[in-house]
Length: 342
Image (cartoon, rainbow, N blue to C red; front, side):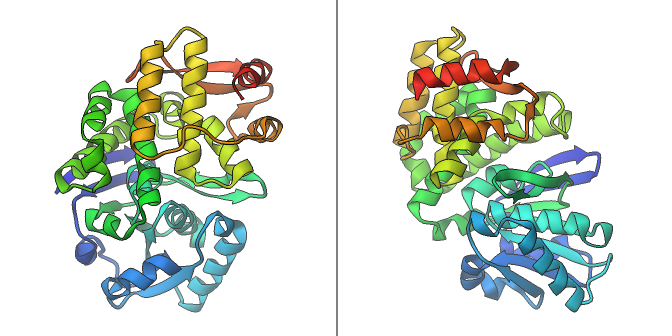
């Protein structure tokens, strides 16, 4: 097992890579524990939830809203949960986002931790302290920064995932390598087949190295006031693509990274051979490199991005694999560049 620490303004978070869901009790000192999970995860792992109370939610982006949050509040009241209670989110990114938001706001905040059950949530959603839900067509528009006490990354949970879900997680690992670690990118290129097979040694290294990048950035910039914006590489368009096409988050980020790479190349920042390596790696990881997009709808969704500042937005460009920079770009210029690509 490997351990990483995040030191945030809201508290410290311990990330345990290679720990087991079966050892969950070791990390909880509270007597009253409530697990928030979804239908699929509960069907697989109910036996591992011990005697804890369980609140079950549905699956998919459609449940990530304030209606679901309100329903959970009601169930917590029924269970007589109070400030001494502890909430554990066990599931993918949607479960962790909702559980973290509920824990941060119920009775003005209770302690919480995560056991992410997907590769995507292990390397992204559960780590970093962002918790929130969607509001109408606006992704993650309502939320808080608050660190979970622990994140247990149990590699065995990944073995129940469909292949498509595994590939979605690799989109975030590619993102971390592209913005901050050329060696990790090369390792993934060399070991992509074993990675897709969830080879224990390979997948643990990929998750650990990916989280080193994210945790080090979060430690320096918890609330996305500067360097943490680099973690949005591929996400500006990814979120717009996700909301207009209905593809999964990982698939949308894959397409978003290709758009960002193309824009970086067009500006003369990214060597053409590096842009080609990014596209080739995404293809090898069975992620989409071509999507049918409605340019007008994508651009309209882009204008709704919560990171937008009036008529400009902070956009992440690459100056080579492993070297990301954030530049403010006008929405009008971005639209003109995108119209040439889409």
